[in-house]
Amino acid sequence: MRAVVTWLLLLVSLTSASADESKLRIGPIDAVLAVPPDVAKPPVALLIAGSGSTDHDGNGPQLKPATLKKLSEQLVARGIATLRYDKRGAGEWKKEFGRPEDFRFKDFVGDAASLIDYLRGSGRFSRVAVVGHSEGGLVAILAAQRVPVDRLVLLATAARKQGDVLKAQLEKQMPADKFAPIGKAIDDIMAGQIVDPPPAGLAIAPAMQPAMASGFNEDPVDPMRKITGPTLIIAGGRDHQLPRLDFLALTTADVAAKSLWLPNMNHLLVDVTDQAEDMASYNQPERPLDPDMIDAVAEFVTAQRP
Image 1 (cartoon, rainbow, N blue to C red):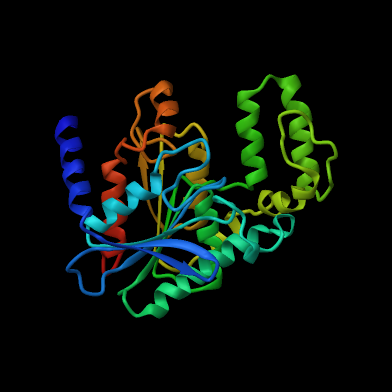
Image 2 (cartoon, rainbow, N blue to C red):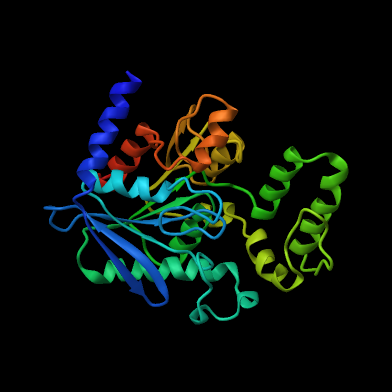
């Protein structure tokens, strides 16, 4: 059965290769617009990447899972246009973004809001959905407070402050004696202090700590409670970065949201069977996304009344 599913996914990917894909510069942001062929005024999904210096395909300097590229291909094959973009910091830092040390997390939100405005103002699309993955889910929630969106999709998104998530992740990976100074430094940075020098294992230069603090302190729960439009929340049981507690907290914050829990899906939205497969998937761009996740997102975006 798995072989059949994989073959079907391959056929879908091949079909999506005929999409009308174009590179755009929207303000200072480099983006890729993919439009399904022969679909008049399709819905469009803005895809927002997770943490790190992530480009429009969902790849970073070391890890290259191509999460956004694969998601775009699958959505386009189902009649949904997509816009994906390079985050600030992907590749070289552009002078239009100002000084890196002056960056604040609200700038990520502003970038997403400006792209939503661009899509809505183009007149080419029937509705605008926002699909945020991981940290991109937080950006999507905050952007939906600034500008109207027709659909909001959160994939593997945390329900806690990012500083707290980072501490929880590091605590699981490190011996207690090595984690202790790092955990304290993160707490200090979140409190607005400058930690100079930062402890070994926390490579955040003092000049960049206010920028990091602006993201560490963003709490998704309160803005999530203010979401009034249709929302879909999806997470997976093989996600080693986020426990099910985050999924449950988000669904509690927005009791009207639709939700889907996929036991075999990991943080990169692919199915894995064990820890070895999970870790390998972070550099396997050919590995297909969870088909149930794709179907759920596509049906939610295209439904007249989700």
